[in-house]
Length: 320
Ligand code: UDP
Ligand code: MG
Image 1: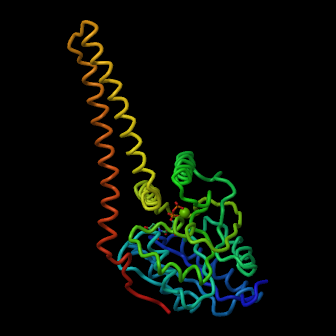
Image 2: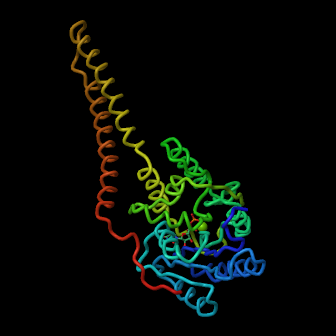
Image 3: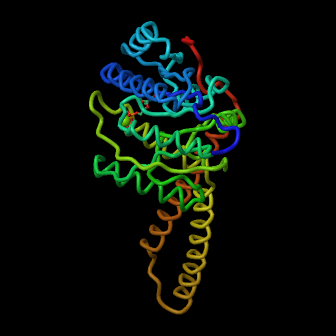
């Protein structure tokens, strides 16, 4: 046990919710039961609570949170003014409770992540870890497409130098020290996994099996999923820019080769006006240039967003 780390810390379980009316009542009950059992066993302090962040839902999500809060003050919440996205909802929750907890655990509202891993996470925290990553043991419950895209994403991230934890999403425990450190990351393009892997500090992992979603549908449309992966890649690496440089060098060398070939053909043999030898490099170089401009444009768009320094989320109502 580390000196100074409480044996019954104040814990907040943060749940981002976007249109979760179908599954939320059951999830809140399960989480509350766990919270009370941990308090009963003195593994966490009595000041611990659930913290639901309503990410601008259009259904009855906020009503459910409000009713639960009125019935039990251990359920607290924050409502955002509009849908700010999963990452921003998590950030809003974490920053809002930073002064009232010793540690926080973030978990999706559908409880696909195993809540039985939470006591083990707390043990790791008490043994001195500042970040405890929830890591999936397998991806059996995922579709082929999700498995394939996830694997490609992690490989790409690793290759481009970002050290994110394989098969870890947003189920994790964070100590207060880590949460406070988030104040120093002011980027508008938030990709929490990347941020935590940059922070350092003592970390550990807890392994668990992920369930399928019991009710409701995924709130991560293909568009949101691709934009999260893109966020991770563009915000945390310069590899795509290096890719442009490399393809530029390759096409430059190729075109020198082509020039040598064309000139020698002109001087040493009979040349007929070559349609193919014009069209092929024309299309190729045109394609490479457009792709390159596109990638530079993506960085430019991100910089544009960062420069404006707009708020990442806007708070509407808070339940204390
Ligand atoms: N979520 C959110 N804002 C969004 C999209 C999702 O707060 O814009 C929440 C959602 O309510 C859930 C979590 O993020 O608690 C993960 O979403 P989901 O389970 O639909 O993603 P999946 O497990 O399918 O990747
Ligand atoms: Mg889910």
